[in-house]
Image (cartoon, rainbow, N blue to C red; front, side, top):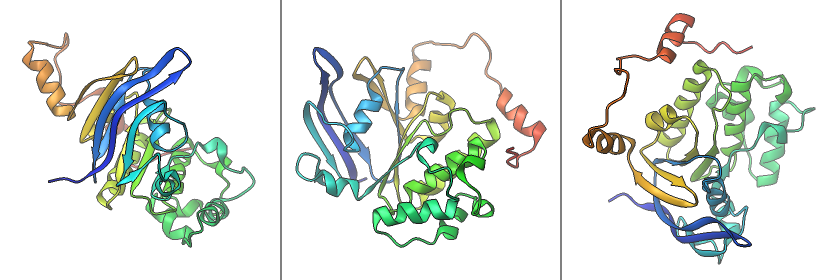
Length: 253
């Protein structure tokens, strides 16, 4: 039986009379890629920020790897990695210096080159973050989440704004992180991304979880209702065409 690593029970978050999160409950299994999806304003970011100890909840219970959020949030911070936005990096420091800075904050000893190798950025070790392309910045941002060797990693729309090649490269990186033993929780507005990456997804709308299952099961359930796409689904899509024509290597300016 797969071990549960996150349990959320009857979680609520109110802002005055407005209910952003309305008594939701779900579990995340150890070693899975779990997607939390929903339109803007659905409550998914608020939910994740509560689990990440960044926002206070109104009521409910959150357990992270056996740790009660109410009793020991500091212990939770030690076992999670939260993706940083590239705007938060000091522009005057190169990647090695930034990694050493964050390692000092975590009180960890890290080999910067080894870490950069994991995200295919060793050749950019002496570059400043502002000199990186969009895809490189996202990979470096994910690298910073690995510094404290977290058991759970939170990625908030990690491929937004990237070209198709950079997106697929980042997908492979996320799979590698999961295969190395971490649990990954991701938000995305790209449904193809959720379908490709996630073992299970929860779809939120207006503060509630309206469905939770594997992407394949959700698709099968929809097809079983008699739903048909207005256009025939082909064996490839336009993104496949783009990558096939332009090459499979990352070409980032």
